[in-house]
Amino acid sequence: GTRIEDPDTLKRFFHSANKAYLQIKEEHIKRNKILTMKMPILDTEIENANNMLRQLQAEKERCNANIADTRRQIASLKKKIKKRSKNNNENHQSTNETNDLLMRKEHHSKCIIKLQEEQKMFDDEIKQRKNALSNKLTEKSDLEK
Image (cartoon, rainbow, N blue to C red; front, side):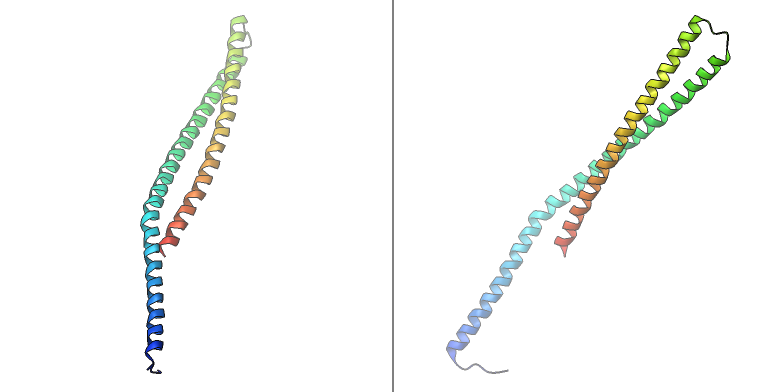
């Protein structure tokens, strides 16, 4: 390359090279600071999000179990009602019992609708939280690059 003989030009050259080096160094320090500050926060947020998802999943499963259980109760009530209507010689007491069974069946049917709404809420919440978690994971992997 060209040799720079002029001391002033040399000084200027070293000065700008040094300035560039310090700038790069500063950028590096800034980036490391961001990493050391942000990473633990992100890790905590990701862990919390995972725990929350596990909790929601468990709630949803409990909800599913309730739905299944209520369906079984309805099926058993239907059988009892069918058996009662076969005994055609229904006296007054028997009619009352049948009405009671029908009311219980109706109540269980309403419960199922409520449970299914709850289940839908869990599904929506889980979906939203999975998205949020995925965003956090992306943010983390972007930082790690």
